Image (cartoon, rainbow, N blue to C red; front, side):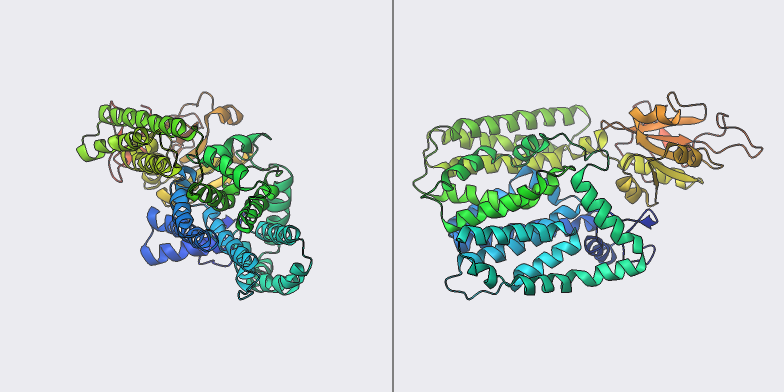
Length: 524
């Protein structure tokens, strides 16, 4: 969008991108414009949104439960493994979660403090409008479910009038509609594609590979995403929501999480990131349960925390040994693998405690240690096995020698395109992919290895090389430039572009040279 000077509607690889509204990409574009084209600048909006979500969750918990619960809720959300991982990824979902958390916390304070009636409902509608600009009408649907839920829970129809739904709808439209109208005027296809295809049809059935998960996907993904707090949150929800014990704050937290789950659980397209807005209220329920001084663990929490910290410690020490065997010589980085031991010792020392707080502190310490090890010690190994920077280095080197096309067949090339600084031709049509890959100039092709036969590339013909692959099954193929006299597809020519660019193939399978990537693996 920056390169094209086109900020009204999203552009990806030179083509209109109909999947999402523009607000998230405005944030990334602003960050890159201000701080330069780098990975951390692209990640910055998601990181800020994650921090904002933690702060809003802490503030809301502090107001409705107390200071202790507010601090525990912030700590719990900040040590939820999936929340941390998504919070450093360039995905719209964390910014969407931040906007929804702001909106629903405003609704919650308005509802819980309704007897004083000093709060305005306006921030709720303003934040929903912003969320509609970030991801679309799903925000309005979640907001409506939460608002209707509060009316039903209060058993007071007058609350519906006090919510001022007509005025609220006008506020949401005032925030979001100008962009939707402008986008429709600039490209009439944009709104129909975005609303009908990427919202209605995607909700009814999966429309892309990778989102077509089975019906039981969330039964596995949500508990895994809430680690290490999954069992605690389950016990907390069942304990605090019992009739006669639940408070108004407990009820609203359940309505908050339920609004997200009710909307997305039946959807045909399933991703864990869709459920991310339910994390803050679920963590708040857990924090409220832990901060209750009368709460006992009934003996189950200590074995769980010991098992959790043991698993992390074993995994971290194994990761440290693996890194040392693969060339890691920094003593400080290798010492990172010893961090989980402290969490394990803390869990053992408090194994007989009835108060869950010290055991939760041990679980949080283990989660923090896991984060440090994953993004510190073994990040290079993860990049080598699963990342795409090595492929981007090869594409970028080939670009310097006249690479004609960079084609992506039935996969997402966005990260490679970012690091290689060139767009890709995305297509799901085998004929189009072959036509562009076997064009006049040399070309690169990104695809899943299992789909090679669909393009008659299994085995690759003469002149075509698989130069990179990762554990996810992606492969990168390079085809050499044809001879000027018109040699055919399978005819040998000069050395591949990566070699011309000065990339040296070593016996270890690693590549060095201009724009070196220590994790590049090539076949030779």
